[in-house]
Image (tube, rainbow, N blue to C red):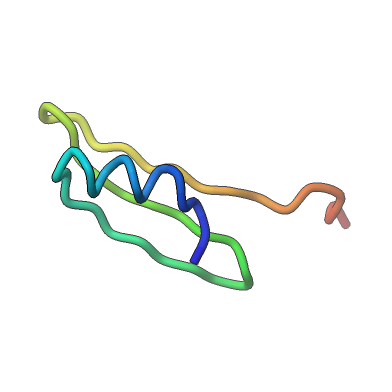
Length: 48
C-alpha cells in the first residue's frame, strides 16, 4: 500500500476514493466538491 497519509485522510473525512498500484507506484482517484482529483507518485531517477 502506498500514499498512506492521503488514504488515511480520505478515510477520516469519509471521502470515497479508488486506489490502484502498478509496478510499485500508487495512485488515488477521488472527487471533492464536484471536482475530480488524480494523485500519483512516481519513481525518481528512473528516466531512460
